[in-house]
Amino acid sequence: MLQGLIRSKFTLGPNTVLPDLGASVSVLRGAISRIDYYFAGSLARRWLWTVIAFATGFYAANTVSLSFGALSINDVVAAAVTVLIVELSSYLYHSSSKKTLRLVFLNAFKWGICFALITDALKLAG
View 1 (cartoon, rainbow, N blue to C red):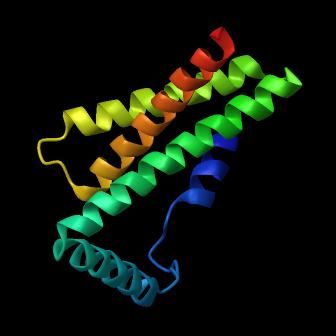
View 2: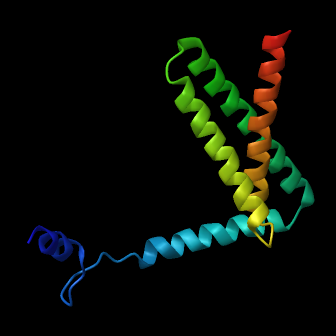
């Protein structure tokens, strides 16, 4: 009985009215194509945004390391989430046959995280 109620609540019937997503989807597709067009023109833009992604990963890892390390609360959770992000981005990047620009930026973000954690470990060792 309960399973039937849950199923009927979340299934779409013939008279179900769905919201019109046509305009928002077209805006999103247009934004993605504009971003691709922006990066297609110049190699310097790609390098600049790759460096920005690397620096953002470096900053994010230092922020996580500093805030969780100073408070000593949820260190294991922060480390697990960081490892999950690094491993997931590595899997996405290395399993794709075509390296898109978004994957290159994600990989640069990952390398920023790794570099920040290595430099933080060297700071603590010295």
